[in-house]
Amino acid sequence: MKISRKDKKYSDVLKGKVWVFPDNVDTDAISPSQYINDPKEMAKHTCETINKDFAYKVQDGDIIVAGRNFGCGSSRETAPSILQQKGIVAIIAESFARIFYRSSFALALPLLEINDISKEFKTGDEIEINIPNAEASNLTTGKKFKGTKVHPILLNLLKAGGLEKQIIEELKK
Image (cartoon, rainbow, N blue to C red; front, side, top):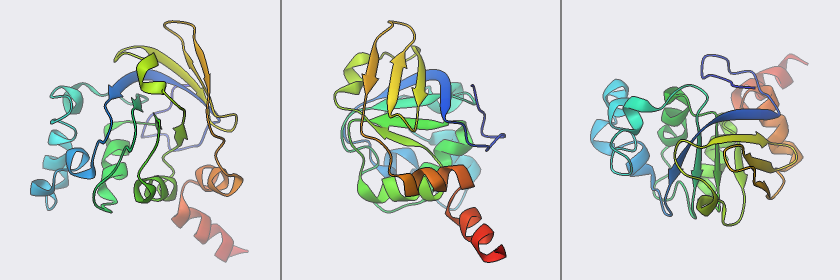
């Protein structure tokens, strides 16, 4: 199912176009600090040091496939948020910086960790991911991959639409 940033409803299975990013993508590359007070300008420059076309060509429903240590750097919650605003519906990486990992799930941005995944995709490939099963398929090459399952508590956060929505629902009970 192709999901857009406008449709924040959770889905176990997502399909989209891939953007391949390298190891050690830091939060300053994702949400450049010189634009921190102007979110619209920040969105125009997101990830430009990694791929100059990303901010202008990324589409709703696209998925990032990256190397190790994605989201390293500062604890800027704008990093996963700006990626969602640009249309990214999930990120698969070999590993994530812990604070980026926590912030992403708090904002209901699904993440999967799969060893050596970045070598298996090219930008523009089509991907299908199954979040609860921690599986990814390169629909372009036909290869399938298995990763580390997301903890059930984090899956519940995704299904609730993020930490804030989950807390609000709990308070209503």
